[in-house]
Length: 236
Image (cartoon, rainbow, N blue to C red; front, side):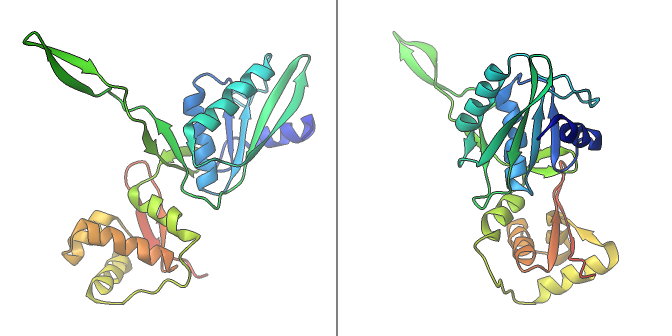
């Protein structure tokens, strides 16, 4: 990529396939964007670009690339395939462009430390002494929605996990599915809790049914930061 192509890309602004970062501060958080791109439709992560689309570049590009590459290797699971380009933008300044393809190994996760470290206890001479334990890393998956990377729900993770493996998915059209279609005729979209309520079934069964209908290309899932919504697939 040359400077002209970079300017055109930046002019488009952030979106589903483009994310800007000015610096590599907190690389353990930046990897969320990498995971989200790999879990969705791929994209480009541009380091050295401001939110206002100013092309600042990086003065110490070797160090910045090393930090982010190391973070991707350390915090992303399973391993993500990507390429890196350097685009000179000014004297001794470059923009890093990480190109991430949609992955066949979805879902990918970010390995993160829990919000609070767990403790165990012991007694020393009849005195209660808390002992800190090294916290186990937790896995969180992210997907790309518009210009944001949001945490994936259980349903979204199941859809990603099974999408590349489950072909010709079949389902039985029963009473629960009939109630679901009646609801969608009136409301156009449904959540897991909505479906569980209108069908009088457990949330677990409602969740699995919606996932199956997405895999069968009957429904489409719309991930959201608050709650995912499901709609009929548009056949037009």
